[in-house]
Amino acid sequence: MSKKTLTTFFVGFIIGSVSLTYATWTAPTAIPPNGNTAAPINVSNLSQDKLGVLTVGGLGVFGPALITSTAGYVLPATLSLGVNGKVGATAYCDEKGSNCVTTLGGTSGSATSGGVGWTSVPLNDTAPFDPSCVYRFHFGSGTGSFYPSAVESNTLYWNISEDGSQKHYIRSDNKTSMLYKAGGPYVGGPYTDIPGGTAIGSIGGIEKDCR
Image (cartoon, rainbow, N blue to C red; front, side, top):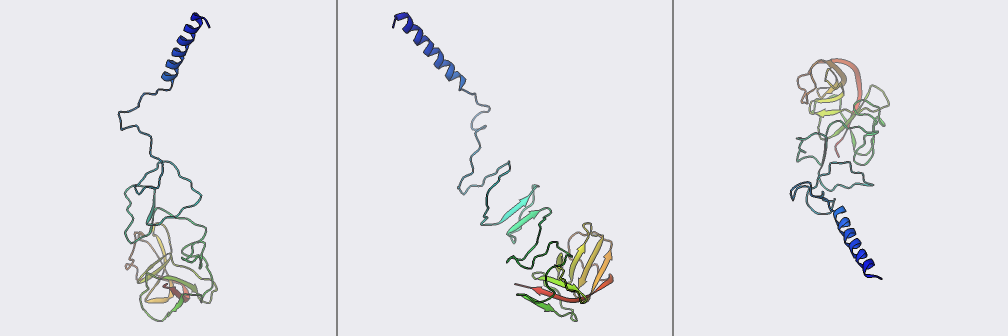
């Protein structure tokens, strides 16, 4: 190899190295530590936020969980799961996957009586309802059960329009009648302000499950 060829080779090598080094260098977009690459999801005990959608093949949550699309909603300490917004499902069941209904507040469910945990509620007494229990009822001699959408000590609320303009309910002091009343906003109970109402149907039985 001649001296001229060798010189040309080294000059080309140096120029190529400088060009490669310059090509791979990207100037920082912000003063450190700003602009760092986001940390990957990991197994540490530190809280992490992800702005994009996360898709997983399965999910286990060992602790309280909150689903919300707006800031400012805080999960009450008494709840294991909180949802800030409307919830939809193809079926609503108890904790064992039984006693399912396809729509809350007025859709026919399973049998009118019987079943593990279900006990009859006397229709001729005025004892208050227990909000910690699940209730169901049937009309007259009907064969389908209906589930209240809300339970308060003095009232089982069945169908309530979203704006509260129409209410169907059973009062603890009148368990034999389905009552109806219009007017007044639905703002969250207790609804002790509706002692009246028009009877639109007879109740044939009420049951509760307090497990």
